[in-house]
Image (cartoon, rainbow, N blue to C red; front, side):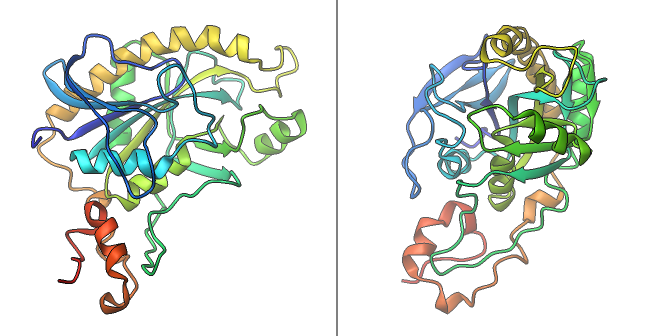
Length: 292
């Protein structure tokens, strides 16, 4: 499917793309297990898109249960080069209100139980994550959100917590003391793996609440979050459409993501097990081939 270059991974509330003409639903087997759901492949406003509901249809999977490696590997197999992530987050700043959108450019990882690299099994790679969000996509996402009528903040730090519970107040206050902007449970593993897969990645962090630090607001609850999630989902659909228009006008990528592995594969080629080379062909095929 040579025209398929854009993927969308939908978070809480975004389980399908309205107005998408569906060509097929494809299950993809990966060396890391099953992705969250079949990939929905079709056209949205004239653009070929692959869509995946992050938590599965019906929201069946906890953040810790997500098979991040399989999800990103599947997008790579499909030919996706640019990945639009949509997710629900809590605000850590008074000026960042529920229904606002943040397009983060940094992460602070507080997860504990998640595989977050394709490498190992005899092949070592060290990619740069100094700029974990594609710097080319950052202004595109911001401009698209503004064009859709959203209040948007470009840049900022997303602290990625384990979940599934929300923060304690002590945790929330400590995160705020570090100067972070939003808190969520899913995006950093995706960003890490997208960089290893040489996929451009950026996120629409849709604010639903003030976590539990805001003394004049009720502490975050699942019920309160879901009320805002529905409103955010409608806005995210419009923003994704605006992003697609702008990506369609881009002649090429030409960013650091495109060749992230070029100088990152460390292991001497003859020492890498052939089964590892075979398993990672969608990721490393332009640099390393399995031995005959």
